[in-house]
Structure formats: structure tokens, C-alpha cells
Image 1: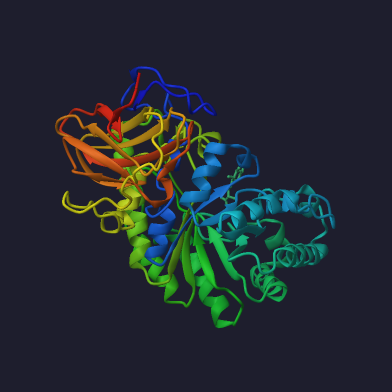
Image 2 (image 1 turned 135 degrees about the horizontal axis):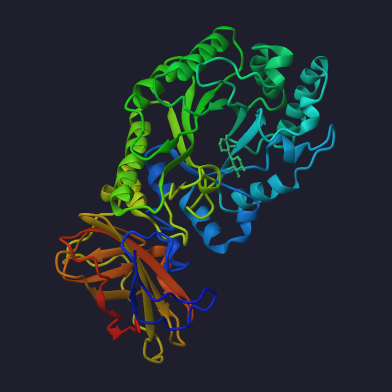
Length: 486
Ligand code: XIL
């Protein structure tokens, strides 16, 4: 990644330092901090692109993540579905028998509601993050404890969630049932019992079974398939199957589509519930390009499967992802880098969701979407500073730029002109309209980021092809006034 020297967070007025070049493959180096990561906060977000195609694009965050302004800015703008990553699990909600704690999850529910996001409840019955008191119960008390837990928690969130992962990870890799507290006490019937209990507590929420390594055709997905078929034939309430999709780079199963389709043929919806795509660190540009193809193939597959209702990425960015802590040596598994800058997989995902069609670049003869109005009173000259970062691979790059109004008057409607290095050609843009695609280009604001108050910034980004020169642009000028990159 290449960056201008980074601005200090919370001091957007500060003019930034000289162009600094870091290793092209480094993800987490001195990349720009927000607001650049908010790229695409309207019109061309993953969320809006997905929704335009009839699916959702979601994320999973923790209560601790709410303290991270960069993370929440991306989460609240780019994603339309939220899964609390830990806070609805049994160990948090009912740490001791009969005493329920909803405060952590309620905070995440409030965040989702404040950002008009829907919610997936995760998860009611699971062998992991299960308080020890459940495992210590005599077998003849487990069913009552499970029913009470489900009834209480589903009741608490009644009417607020899109779906519940009622049972999570019930199978071993060979397709046998995992011998956890629930199976040991109740046998296979615990699944139907949990689903029926959840339905009684909220008749409208979608009820899911969720697992990992069931994305392709294999023994484990066969077991899930047979279970779903059996439950449906018995009339057990079951609406969907969640495919976690914790993938390893380059290993999205080729049978994903066929597998999803055999489930939808049983009369359930399907969703990708915990998508990430891990690679060995440090991430190479080749790996990041492959990650783009992996994400795109998952998205394309979901869009092609009638009954695939959405995709949730597990985490927002590489810095909050669970992967490095669980799979040592692996990481870089999400669409955003450690500084919440979009990675190549972001552009690949947006493209798979149809961003090219959704954000046509206007021809030079057509006016931009929001022309700069003539100021009613002459103000001080515009003053501006630009920061940027670029991630590149063999033939492509993704760039995020932030323009800061360093003057004392608000900018209302803006055009930022700059020179792209020779050989670079813009193929798609978000949070700005860029025209033409090469040479000296102009980025015009979109509807939501047209006003830049003094000290504030606007961020946008683009994907481009290149022929070897992946340097950042030069010669920035805002509404005709040169900007510093200093
Ligand atoms: C993970 C969380 O992300 C971590 O913070 C936690 O320490 C462990 O659990 N499958 C699931 C998720 O169903 O609940 C897991 O979440 C990731 C694997």
C-alpha cells in the first residue's frame, strides 16, 4: 500500500505530510485513518448495491467495536444487517442459571436500529461459549434449561430480529452429531425441540440452523441436508440454513451453488452468515487479488441462487476480525484493512453486486450530479489538503482519497481535479463521480457528501487498471484551487 503521510485522527484540519511509499503488499502500515473508510456511504455502498439486487450485505460486530469510530462509520454505512458477534451467546446472556443479562446485546441492537440495519440473532444453542453450569446439569435438566434460555432470549428480542441462529454447529466433520450437552441429554431431538421453543416465543422471526464447512457438497453438508429434510417433513418450524463460510484463500468450494440449491429445494432459505477469507500473513498483492475473486464468487453465487437472501461478513475489517486470534499466522480475511480502508476485495465485491451498472461515469458533455453552486457571498479562497492510499495488484488498484477543507468557509458541492499517473484508468468509483477515466480527471461529489464544513473532510475511492505505475495522483485542486498533499 502506498500512502501520503497520514493525517492525525480527530484533527482533520491538519495538513498532512509528504508522499510516503510503503511496501506495496503491506496492508496495515501507515494507511490513512477515517474518514476515508467511509467510502461509499450512500448510493454505492455494499448495502445499497446488495439491496438493489434483492439481498442483504451484513457484518458482525462486538460491543467493544462500538468504541471504534472508524469501524462504526463503515459498519453503519456499508452494511444493512448486523449480527452481534458474541453478545447474544449463552455465556453472556445467561451466565448463571436464570439470571439474564441483555445489556451488551441491547447496545448492538440500538446501534443497528440507529443505522436502519436489520439484525441476525446469534446464537441460542451452541456447544461453545456455553457457561459451565449448563454442562454440569444432570441430563434430565438440560431440556428445561435450554427451553427456558430460548424462551427468555427470543422473548426479549421478539419483533426486533430478522432471524435467529437457533442451533449452531451441531455436526462433526464426518457428519455425526457433535456430542455436546444438548445431544447427550436429548439426542437428535434437541434440534426440533429448540426450533419449536423458539417459534413459540416469536412467531415471526426466521429460524435458522447454522454451521461451518457445510458450504460445499461433503459429508457434513449431507448431514445438514438430511436433518433439514427430516425436520421439514415433520413440520418442525425451520426457515433457513446459515452457511458460515469461513474460507481459506482460493478454497471457495466449486460446489457451493449446487449445495445451496439442494437446500433451497427443501423449502428453506439460505444465507452466508459469517463470511471471511483468510490468508497467510503477510498478505501479498497476488493474494489480495485472489481474495477479490473469492468474495466475488460467493456474491455471484448467492445472487444466482433463488432463496439465497444475503451475505454477512464476520467482522468489519482485518483489525477486528477473529481470524488472527484463532488461526495464528493467518489474517487479512475481510474487505477492509486494519485502518478501515477498502481492500481490493471491496471493489471486487461491489463489482459483483453490480456497481459498474449502478454508477455509470457520465460522459463529459453531461453535467455532474451536483454542480458547484455560486457562493452567495464571496468567502475566503478555498483551501484544501488531500490524503490518499492505494492497494495494488498486478493489473489493478484500489485507491481511497480524502479531501479536507482547510479553509474557514464551507464548501457546497465540490470538484476535485487531479492527474492520474500514465497507464492508470478508472473502472469504478464510489462516493464520487470521476470523469474522464484517465489523465487529468475530475471527481465530483455525490449527493450525500457535497458539503464539507471547515475542518471536515469528504472521502471517496475508485478502482483502476494500471500498466505498472501505481503511484498516487498528483496536482490536486479543489474547485480550481490547488490543494496540499504537503
Ligand atoms: C467468534 C467470535 O468472533 C469471537 O470473538 C469469539 O471469541 C469466538 O467466536 N463460528 C461462530 C461464531 O458461529 O460465533 C464465532 O464467533 C466464529 C465461528
